[in-house]
Image (cartoon, rainbow, N blue to C red; front, side):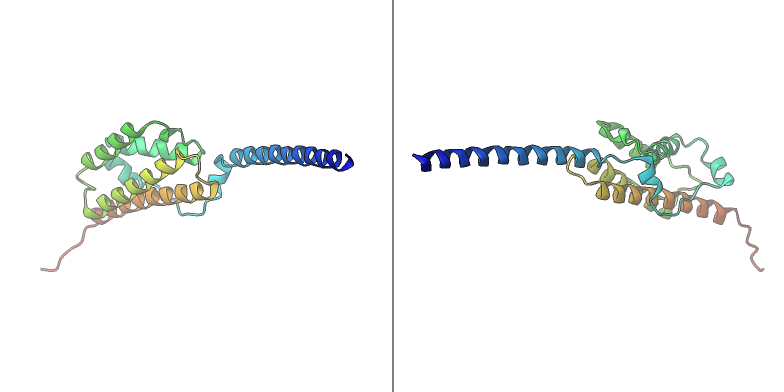
Length: 173
């Protein structure tokens, strides 16, 4: 009789102790998911060289609206706002197609178009990872860095193109 009582009592203790462990694991998981949020502070810690456009370049591309839409999205991403990627696939596709098609002729070169293609790849990767719930904060931060580096590289290449074209090289006769 004592053995039955003791075994039932030990099973109850075991059952209740397992339930407490499971509740603790659930609260730990919610803390992990909250810490996956990317903030402006996280993005400001990213180490990369950010190239801006020169004044000459800005004059050349002043009518290139798609670039300025992309630049606005980059500004929001730098603030930690990834809402640009939430259910916005059609707008992203349209923006990238028009970015290539409406590139001003003054900067349209194979090197600039290659940077646009690289930026497009990084943008699609960032869009897919930002919409996944299983993406870790480290992975998302790395992808944001890749995207920002690609945008900065595009700016640098546009600056180089305008600078190269504006040089007056005298050829000997």
